[in-house]
Length: 401
Ligand code: GZL
Image (cartoon, rainbow, N blue to C red):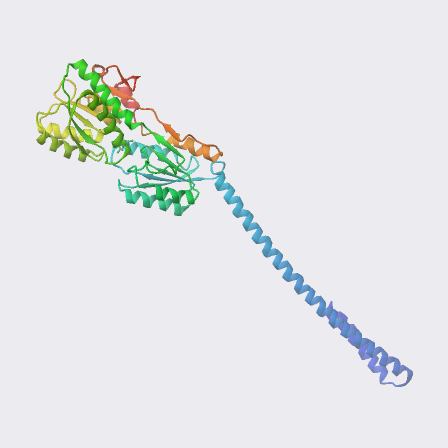
């Protein structure tokens, strides 16, 4: 467009100049026309420059607007992503970090599988699972790793019950809700809910059952050996305290208490030592989980100690895992006091409550049962509350975890 204007004006100027060359009125007119053409050409130049500048300005404004629009779109997308992540189960994947104790027992295996089954991709979760190998330092490191990852929720089964307040404060600062499962945390309340069993009641139930069973059997004196769980874990503390409370009340003798760390190897090592140190002096062995009981059975077999119904030694165990109930059915473990490992579905309920803006219960107990063969089932109460026992059958074993 600009070129065209210029070419017309220049032609006019050329014509004018030609006429001017002829002299006289015509020449004057031509001069005037030439001047007008020059003025017009200059005006056209200015207009073109102005138009160009306006075009450049418009282009810059367009670029700026485009950039702003792109930024806005990105911000909106980020916000949408954040809303989607916050919505979690409502269409978004929920990121869960689980710091598990370790892999020390059948109970732990069942607990881990329960969590992996519930917090699956198919159910809308992304589970970051860390087996902390019974190492508290590793467990604290795993929780801090989840904070770095920016998970939506953190589940902790605490190896021991103390040393937690600092890292839980870090979770709170990161606005990540913590749910404690199974064992308890006793030196901090910076978590949303605890889901687990009542370990003190488990210990008391074992003691009250033993009192009732010893009376039925006409056993006048109890000399017990205890193989404890991981020292400082709430499961160990509760079971030891609960059983000891009944022992003290009944005047029983607890010859020794040593930790088998909830493992079969640990149970065997401690029982081998007991068989040497207390040969012929004990008539009750209490193992604070089934895997310790399996190890103790090996040690007593090797030492020629007879245990189980109708034998010299009453063998009491906790957890009541499938393998433990099989030993009850085989007449090896006299009674088994369950600690239910399948808490993950309840934990998911807590997460869904939080997702929908609700407030979950602070403490949620999962139910436990007590198991024996018919001849070892006796009536007893715990804290004045009558207890029922489950007869171990093939069907019960089949249905166990
Ligand atoms: C109890 C759980 C214990 C089990 C053991 O709730 O923490 O840890 O009794 C396991 O088998 O190792």
